Length: 77
Image (cartoon, rainbow, N blue to C red; front, side, top):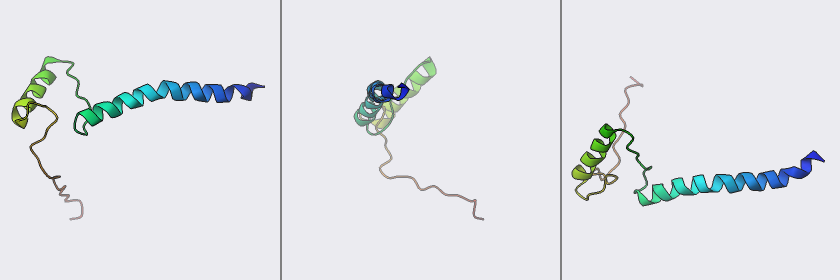
């Protein structure tokens, strides 16, 4: 019957999803917990170069902020 194809379809779906998820997680792990930045236009490339200089380590994903910044909201007032 038609439902006999469901296990094979499930296995194929999982096998096609794994590389995309694994790649994203590997990039996140190697970039200090941040997503990979892609420079598609020259302006983005200049921003990444600026971040490399500002970080002091030569890596664009290192931040100079050593603590999480508090979010101040005036919505309750």
